[in-house]
Image 1: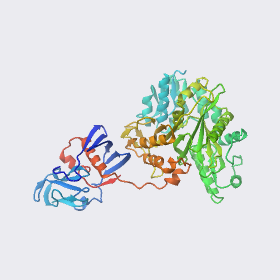
Image 2 (image 1 turned 60 degrees about the horizontal axis):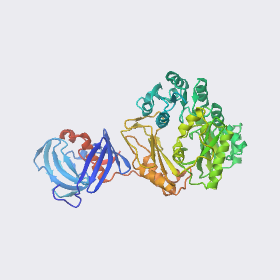
Image 3 (image 1 turned 45 degrees about the horizontal axis):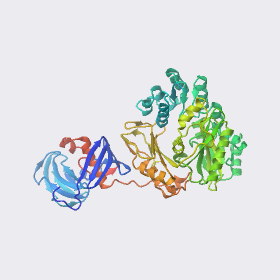
Length: 136
Length: 492
């Protein structure tokens, strides 16, 4: 995670039994439950059951409007940029890493292509919807 | 004692009856439909017999099929559970004719109490208070309207042979009466094959209280205190407790005495429940007698330490009650929440599906009676109750506190449940103050809570959990997975 920022407490998640996980966050440890059923993810977190769908395929997703643009998924801090403009990338390749909600999340190439622009540097705070990388 | 008990039911109650039989050393036979091949209850019995297709009328309600299963397996007694054939006099009679023992009241008690008109007349004649009403044989529109005017608005229309809230309607004026009557009759014909109506004064903000009674075949009759079941949706109970927070010791004694009087008037044998409406002024009125074990019997077990299924079996086997009228004491307070696969935000619509993940709460004073396990299929064919969560405490406050905590550790993933509503009920200041009435949900929790998304760390947790569950997949597969490319999220 590099130099620790103000939100950089180390979080770990551990699978302890099918569907049962342990979340560790400094001195805080708790159990949560999570199972996936196709496109739907069922999450039980602090007394509440949630039914979630990834919106990546939905029509209101900005990914559809600009097929090559990859947005910040949630508020967070860019902690690593793995590519530069002009670089050829393959589907699935890690483009950059955003630390959001105390977790590191890799942003991966949805397809083969060439990086057209990179609009983020390590340390930048980013908001959802901000285009971080464009592919062509 | 019996050589083998056939349990003519499914789900939670079939599992619960099997559990007591196992303790008593009595082998059990489960029956199941084609829809319940993978269900929990056949696994919990020593033997299991397929009795028909998914449709209840051709399986769990098929008297011949159930009796054939008893004959084939050598069962000599039948426990009907609740619902299905439990209050069916013809079934009780057919069981006896087949030379078996019915673990419940005799057929004539079912018959007498199943006809609500006859039951009310009998109770009124025995001095048990009944709500002002009409149960006349003249069922013409004119006679019913005249009766409604005399009883006084608002009135409630009830099918004479009804149950479970079907066909019941509150009518507040003469103008609304004809259409309400027509609708109630239609529903009553459809559900019970009988459209005779009884009509009663509708009490505003009443509480539902009931008295558990037990009678043996030697003429002994006792009560096991009351339960309050005022928290209802669509006239069906979802939260029950004992003792009722509304009763003073004097009113409690009067209510339990009235329950006993009603049971005596019915010549009651085995376990039964006498239901009353309790008005805000402390007066109470007979509603009906449920000639079966109730769903909510577990709260009575929690405060008395008794096993009601065991007592039912012993009574059916001809044993005398092991205690006298004043020898049962109640200790503490117990609550029950019924966990349903239903959607409180959409008219309590049943929510079928597969239970993908399931975890029961544990701890002192907690009992969880479940009819499903992880992997169970909740089908559209039967009542969608999944489980009953019961908590006991030294006093109501402790029982409520334990319930609030236990509801936050009750995990059901894969099907939509009423868990959030149950949490909202027991968290509500009015519930905690014991200010209950049968319109509690409509008054306090009518507006569906706006959908709230998970907090950010929960989404992060879900992401991490999904990766761990899947193991190290190829980056390519990961990239084509909508959960991996980190798009926006939404509540499904």
